[in-house]
Image (cartoon, rainbow, N blue to C red; front, side, top):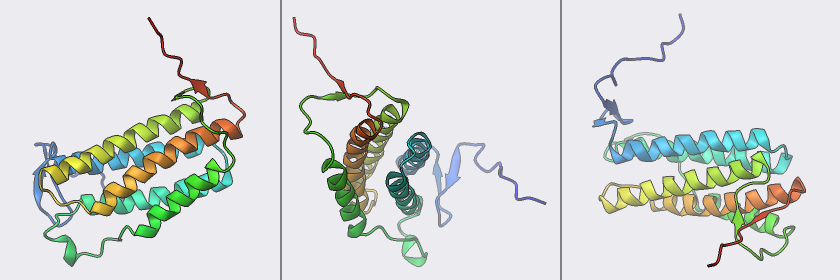
Length: 187
């Protein structure tokens, strides 16, 4: 018999952190790792829209890091030291910076604000960037509420949103799609 996906334990609006601590599903920690899960799903969608071996390899690496972050956020911080949760490392951030620099080397200088659009893959990169920024805001809110979040997580999410912006531009470049310039209405 296959493992059942439903447990019915969340039917009353509570869930358990890794470690067993029960919290309401509206808890900021649940919102944070739920947003990381949403981000991870959009990263997968982005990879499905943009077929580029180097970018897809990087996106898979990012998905692995997001699982690491989600696991960390899903833990009761008082019980986490007793568990074997993978760590995020500073090298994960330098990896993103290297990828940003690599893409920027082939991109034209940005001379205008870029609007999402022009191709489904470009737009998906921008939606993914927005979800990443929301995940970052959730983690910052956790800090403001004195709930533990590893500072490296916030730094990673900040750099990841930069990566996703540049990736959107890179996708447009690779697909030979004109970037959509923002032309503000005056008057």
